[in-house]
Structures are given as C-alpha cells and as structure tokens.
Length: 395
Image (cartoon, rainbow, N blue to C red; front, side, top):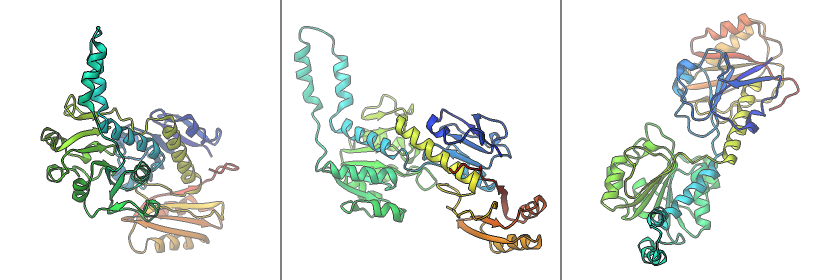
C-alpha cells in the first residue's frame, strides 16, 4: 500500500520527512491523492478529487479550505493548533512595544532627516515627540484564551503587566493552563473599558465576524492600543479608523494589510508575519504530517476541525473507518450489516461531534468489498474505507 500526498505551498522539509519513502508518494499537486497538505493555498472544491480521504493544514486557521463541503463528503480537515503559538506570541509582544515606544513614527522621523551639520541637534530636538511608556503595571486585555492567548497572558504577567481575559468558550485544558492571576472579564465591553492593550485571538466564523464593531469600540478606554493577530474580519475596519480619528484608539496594529488601512495614521499593518518563523513552520508541518499518518494508517482522528477526536488501540489487521451523520441507529445498522455478512466485531468505538459521528471497527476477518459497499449505501453514511497500516512504520 502506497499513500499519495498532494502538497500545495512550501511545506517544511522536516514535516515531509515524516512520510516514509516507499510507503508514501509526496508531490506538488499530485494526481489522485489520498490526502492534501497545504498552508495558505485557497483550496477550491473542484481541486479535491474523489480519492481524497483527508486534508491537513500546516497552521491553525482553515478559512482557505471548504470545511462544510468536506464534512458533507465525510472528509476530516486537520490543523495544527498551538504549533505556531510562540511565534505569534512574540510578534504580539513586539507590536505592544512598537506602540508603547512609538517606534514606527520614530524610525520614520530619523529616516526623513537629511544629512547635514546640525543632524545631531535635529535628532535630539525631535525625539521628545516620541516619548512612550513602559509595560509593567499596564493592563493587557486578551480576547480568546486558547494556545496563543494563554501563552501571551502568561508572558505579559511575567513582564509585570495585569491581564484581563475573556473567552466564553474556553476549554477545560486551556482553563487549567491559564495563570490564576488572570482576571476573568464577563464581556468584551469590560475588556475594552479596562485595558491599555487589547489583543484578539479568536477564529473567524459567523459569531466572530466584526466582533469589534462601532458600538463596542465606542466603549473602549481612550488611548487603547488594539492588536489583531487573529483574522482581519474579526474587526470592522471602518469603525477602527473612525476611533483612530477620534483619538479613542492610540493605535491599531495588525497582521492583515488592506487598501483601506494603507497610509492611515496610527495603523501598523504587517504582511502576515504571525507564523513566519522557521520554527513555527517546522512545528506545524510536523504536527499535521503525523496527524495525517495516524488517520491514513490507523483511522485515528486528532486535531480535526470538523470530526470528533477518536483513537482506538489496534487489535486487528482488519479495520474499517466510517464517517456518518449523527442520527439514531447508525451504529446498529452498521453492526447488523456486518453480522449478516458473518463478520465478528473484535472492538468498536463511536464518537460524535455536533451533526457528525465517526466509527472505528476492528474485525476478526477482512470485510468483503461488497459488504463495505452495502454499508456505504446506508442512508447517513458519508464515507467508509478499509484502513491499511504501513508495515513496520508507526507514525
């Protein structure tokens, strides 16, 4: 068995090395792939052939992948949450220092000085207008306390800052990792009113689009520095620009340039540098490559944005993986069909996530292709495959 991996974008060589030669064929936009591995390439549904069983993004966001369509087709989409967290955290810290010490206008001022005999005097005379402030004692508001937000909160506390956090959907694991001295806010408005800096770390979805709009920004503390290293559309750019003109915002620093922001006073827009470190790119590639291998070789699901997490120790060479709608009697119909074909179930696990469910079945003997086809025809079954491991090659 040779699995085929179609690669889009430049993926770290360390990550690609996780696909052992002979067991895997890896190539740029490879035809008839079993899986697709990408970073920022905007994947169109027409680019995804019927052979595809999984998609992996070497990063956190998956806005460039048609996730809903993949769910309907029973294809898991994997990402690498937290693999680039340190890189993003460090960039946010740099952004805070840029704003606190007025570094961008200061650099622009020096670059604009002409050479001459009074150069030193002009440097000294001009520096007064760029006097800034220090971070200790200031309050950082963090909206979204996942991998990046939690790491940022911890680092800010170590710098002597106060931290005000808001995340109504925080996971149990992230809550345990969060420092006890992070003060919990009851609303975004509370964060905006109580912070000197507010940093956004939320995914872009229907609930977070324009999360910071004109009414919310109107409640912000005057002189607030707004930091957006999440997604461009989680803020209303027109509202941000209006608040900058009103001096309610001191600065808006983001990782998402746009024509509307270009050349506007108080705006520093970086060219998507959040995960642009060699370390982050390598970490993301390694994580998602291992997840793709676990899925292809064992049927395991880890860090999927549209499937439940499912792992089951392999106790048989004959494993079936089934993606299905989360509706009553699906497991019963699947097991009945297997029993009618004389197949004995050695072990089984079924997990659900919203409207999706995923089932792994270890059998004492191989399932005939006709049996697999009968299960595939059960209403609600989205995809089914026999899972073949790579001999002597554990992910």
